[in-house]
Length: 622
Image (cartoon, rainbow, N blue to C red):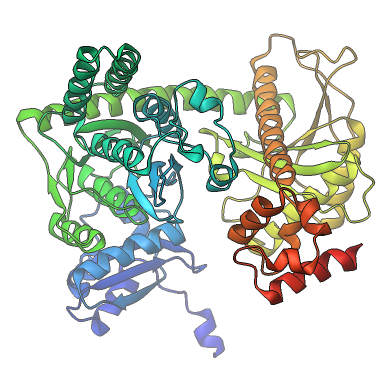
């Protein structure tokens, strides 16, 4: 490049955009607008790339948000697609990956739990969450794990299906407590025939499919028959099942009369913030609701926000047959086609004006309005607390991201580190992280060493993934559970890694170890305390307690997993099925380790080669 070229100022804004028009045609596709540092500002789709981009080339006539975006644009990138529907799907994928500043972004997109009836001779009923698909029939989604747990508890009372694992089912020799309290019919020990159990499973599946009236009539008829036959114990059991079913329906709240399967999606916008309420209707039953707070700009319209929400929300979820919306979206035909292609059958989008569907939308809108009002009030309170935190600890400005660290272990075993994150909108749970302490060279129970390891691993990753600190992943404040020793250990690590500029505070209980008498330690400064009734003190206590809760929960999960582990887990080629077969045959892993080759070969599913491998594994170790 010549000196003359270097001295010429780089063009930005609508002039840059106008230059791209010469190379664009009327193809559908996706475009990206980037700033001078090549950061993506905006991702958009277009039915006609040339026509869409030309709208940005005009110097006037834009909203404030779009005008700012255009003024920052230094380059653009384009990708043509075969269809407009492909452009819509690609746009939403790129938004989720790149998180551009000027796009509407769904920030909380976790999976939803389902109820699973497994594929087994004697199926179990359980909660299922995540992308991994086990064989069986799925019912959902439910709005929360709590909603599933409550439903499962009541369904156990009504249909008495087993909830034990296959391994436990196969190893039982007598009924468990679930049978004693009439929550299971004990198929594991032959207390019910396969045909009778299958009938119970069929009833449960019909109920979950919305045929509750049919099931209740069937149970009522059976109860009448039992009474006439003077089988009063059986009649009482059927009466209890009918009562439990009624309680399930009552807990679900109001169920729609004319809507069998739909998601009700309502949006409320206010003062540059948004709340989307989603209600799940399956089998004519209301399976709960969840609120979302997508990131939006000050001058966005409902159609843009709702379309972006739908595209990102259903990117990883199967849509229902119908979406009932509070507002029209920008491209309903494209969205309907994209969702239909994903589901493999027709999905319809409706914006009702009257009737029961309009009443359902009105209820969802009321929830969205109230939820956003609460969220805005909480955010205002949080802002005050962050400002108070900055004043209390002499920070240059209120922190946008606080990371709080804690460790948990029992005498050094199953040690874990935990990091929780909080910011202007409260706890950021999708940013929480857990660390399995590797402990190379550490003395068991060395809290200082464990904290050093966690911080070193955390900041090594940050330095690698976000060296310029411009992705919002770097903390403005570290809170460490501990006193002067912990702070000193962490400060040493921070200096070694070249990140000593991040403020750090150690939170230690006072001399009486009472909550409310916490002492705060900072590098190079005197120990300080806050007033007993200071709201900032309560805020710090909540942060520390949340880190402690997360650390304890992570430790317990690790400990429970280790308790269930056996030496068989370390043998190559021994999966879950063979492990169950070996334990069922010998009774324990210890008995497997003592078995001879002939006994090992006698186990169903264990080949001669695997028997030799098992024998060698245990005897070489011995």
